[in-house]
Image (cartoon, helix red, strand yellow):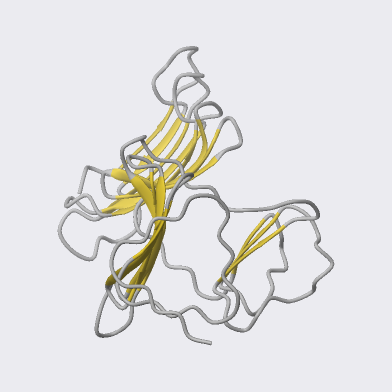
Length: 219
């Protein structure tokens, strides 16, 4: 590690006001620790570092400006609360238990609970991994370019796309797919059924109906 030192400078604009490096007993290689306190507004107000020469480690710093609090590992910041009060998390994070957004008491049946207001229902379905709650209208929006699709895909151990439902912006139509087979498309002017479909109950059609192929009607 670097040579041990203790530096205190009281001169205005000096690089270091208080600095300690290579503290503790290094266990291997270039492990060392650094503590710095500086008054210069362009420098760290507090910087505590412990890392190895390979770049791995943890840094907690506060410069009173751009980064109020950050924890870094290696060359990248993984968690930061910046000067604007925003929290930034970088990289893959693992969360054990439930995650509440807008609530400190997420419903126990959901892994993720997004809450903007109280709906009046205390718990979610036991088959729910995501719950979105509000005291007014609520929903999920998918935003894509105008030549892409947006929808929901369903999978199981045998097939990652066992079924799907999506809207195509390119054709301005919905598509329903079951058992890896397209069964229906719907646009503002057309309803198209693919293959042999059985309709139980009453089917009412208003306007012009075009049939291609065989039509079987049973009473």
